Image 1 (tube, rainbow, N blue to C red):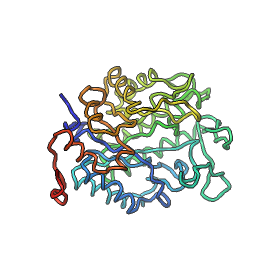
Image 2: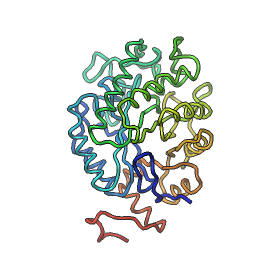
Image 3: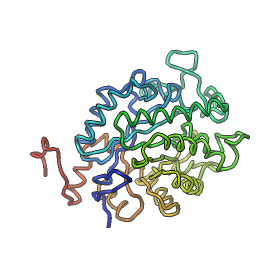
Length: 355
């Protein structure tokens, strides 16, 4: 029986355990560049025993940033610092993943600690946002520009170029961000996508951009390295995206070399009522895994070692992705192994602190 500290082989890499660090925006970049904050932040999870560390949403273009302070990978100059970070992570027994993202209509915002408000295009640090349809996320916000065919082709090309840079930067896993109300999620949802062309209407049409992004990345990403997709498995709103849609999407993605569906939820509809409780999104990972026969990742208020271990033991997901708990304790994996009675390797510099 698999457990939290069982290895997991995905294509040509083997994770030493099932503890994965979920992408967490830091809003601490200038012009998209990683810096020493990212090195220490991400590096601490590697020394803390996690098997895979995924960067925050990393913008494939300047206009694809959530805020002006987002991490980016839209130009070659971004590669060197990212390579320093991925090298450190691998030196300490983990793998580095990158979450490639475009914020769509949720772009051009202030940092959360400065109010998280939309910045208008004619203000400093602001720009015009884009989306599948000219529908704002919040009624008080400026409506985005509806993407035309040339704009869609640029988005696809930007993801492809970002994947090429990701490989040069030493990442071993790509996760495509198709969740939380960002651009690809906006295309998937019938609430934010009201197009009448081949990118709107049916589920297959609304999935077209994501499938084309996957195809473009597959053209440059090695076939023996993992490819993940993060989805919002439910929109938590009547008439929105559902778990049944997510299962159907996973069935479309699996034949396209996608290895794992990272099952989050929400984020595309302002004011959605979400019944938050410990492990509240785990059932989505379980349903997609069971019905689409694909690896899944569970997220959502997973904070305790026993809780994480039982998710794996019960076959509800193949990995658990932790976010806020990792901020509270970057060494969660080492602590979890001790509490659960599993023997794991510690960094030699920390061995004198073993329990």
